[in-house]
Length: 310
Image (cartoon, rainbow, N blue to C red; front, side):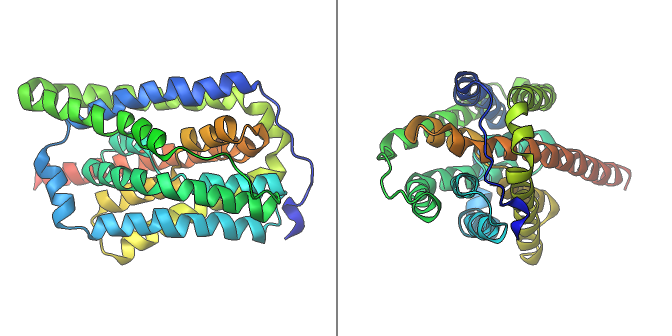
């Protein structure tokens, strides 16, 4: 399909602001969200995910196998410009992460499953992100040389934003259970508001890039996002998972780790052009994810109301 074959690819906004925003400010917010998620968890919740691994395996299959295949396949199908197609592969190799945890928390879906997927995927992506980055550069940019991505540094960075804050929240709940339970809903509202603010700030500052590359990257990234969410939903449905887990897997597959993808493009590859696909995807992803938050909250709210009256 030649609709996306235009060679015009432009990176417009200031690199410095977006790099700081997505790799410095957003992680601070996400650390706070992970503490809040820890407040809503118990050891029993995590054990339940491990004892019944069907949902975990379904989500990992969608994230680690289906998502990269979608990014590679649609980039070729749409005959996208090389820098966009390569950026799409790098983004597809960065599934879920802490951002998807925030959307799951805001929507009241299955938090334990979300954290379980993040924990396992974080370890796997330490090895797969460099491999898919190399594949992207060799396929589309004729580059077989990439800087070494330090696995230990990436694992420690992810641990600081996942395991540590969740442990802090769970410990606080163990020490002050009544206070922790009272804090959950206010923090859920704050998370939802903060996500909206991030959507607005990120979109405004990347707007020129989005507009300049709306045709070359917009069609591809929209197709990847909608296909990924559909595949995640379909796999969860085929596995006959309950709705909260189905919603969680849909979030985990459709919401990518933008911070990691931009970190790879900006810091390791030093290529703002490879960040274009991620910046365009960020707008599409936020629209679909916030729509899904509304749908999941509404549906779970209706179920709670029915349960309360029965």
